[in-house]
Image 1 (tube, rainbow, N blue to C red):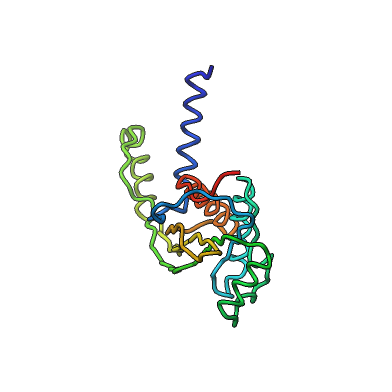
Image 2 (cartoon, rainbow, N blue to C red; image 1 turned 90 degrees about the vertical axis):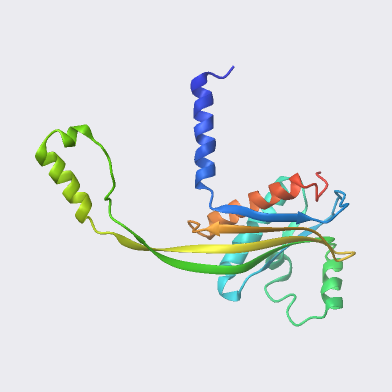
Length: 212
């Protein structure tokens, strides 16, 4: 039986993970009357500018790994077809390539927008009623003087706006769509890891894919 202290630590850990999360779902949708179905091979297809190729690699790889962790057979488009597999091809040719690889479902990752904002972070001037400083003049003066004149600085925050869709190849029908916002992730590795877990959890929750 868990002690009160152990329960408290678990709750704090949960709150810490939530607070550190940089990716949030802003909206999601699934088609009416969708029944969970088993797909033999799922392709994860990133639609991201060539200049962000490393980001595409990370996003695809993590989503593939998260699908595999749930028991699904999944591959990334870069791994399976290379970077230019679907460039300058017709719809019939693209579908033929998918079917030749036994792919019967596609999960897209689209970077809709990427915004950078330069924000000013002020110095440490804020109210803190520390009695030990207020009781004596010089400690009070020194503490507040330091905070008032401590210089601020500028930071650049990056926001990513994503969309992922699930398509059935045989009918080309859209089964599910989700939009997310990622705020200033530490790096592409952590962004891909966080995004993959979040999206797969929502897909499973919405009964889009039949669990293995």
